[in-house]
Image (cartoon, rainbow, N blue to C red; front, side, top):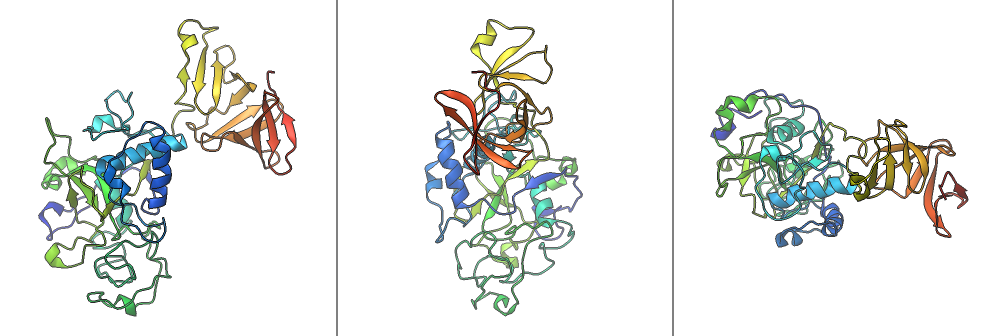
Length: 407
């Protein structure tokens, strides 16, 4: 990580252990942002007004921009909740209050690093994902850059001085002559993903990271610690402190006079409340799995009574169910009767549930009330027929089945 002999805050070059994680192939697009934002606004989230005015192309597949760091982490939380994953960012060390609004300082202890939910990459994770297996090189492809490789200032693509659609440099990109295009228009188009198959890690928009900025951080031995999260939140107010963003954007050039901001090691910095047309985000998530139905709540009735050590729970997308120690694994669902959720199920996003009359069916928060039946490879919709629940209608031919309703 880092580079010697260029910018002072990039040295010394050092080794960092980064645990496995998942990363988006593309930068978050305007279309994705709008879809999740629409859901989020109906579920307790608030965003700044600036993110209503991103730099747009002709379609929604351009990278989202005009996003403050605060809005970026709220988006990550909303995306997690939308898919039924456990959010990463909270307002307290106990992680009882999900961060959904305002521009509030959150410390490292307010982040659930073991959750499966989406978050911003740490600076080390970003450089690992962008650099891939290439050590000691300026760019993911080697030591040089031209306009056929990435979108940057006067790079020669048809969108000069603006963003390109995500994944534009896929072997079909059009590059025309522009001053300082460095001959990109003379190159044969190639797919310009990095070794991990990621697009636009260099150029287009720079990407927010989790870390606070400290120009001397790489001189600190803790910067080489396993899974470093960057400098700790300083005591007192963070006013005047900046966050990291990486990868450079469409307004940056490869000039050494500017510090070569398109390089893998370059550390962009900005105030977390700022919104820039050249800064967006790419999400990551830890290689973790959430406990089955972690988001279920004990219902009010359970606070006053229980039976055989059991309790009633409410799962907002699935309904009410009773879990008891008397029948390990099995739960009594208010509409479906006795069902057996696979104990290896993951959060609310990947659940196989055994119905005695139907066998194993798959569903999740995202697709419910639709179920997938393993035995016949068919999708079923859960209906209410004449006010009776637990009627399943096969998608292919609309045939109806009753698989264990308690009514």
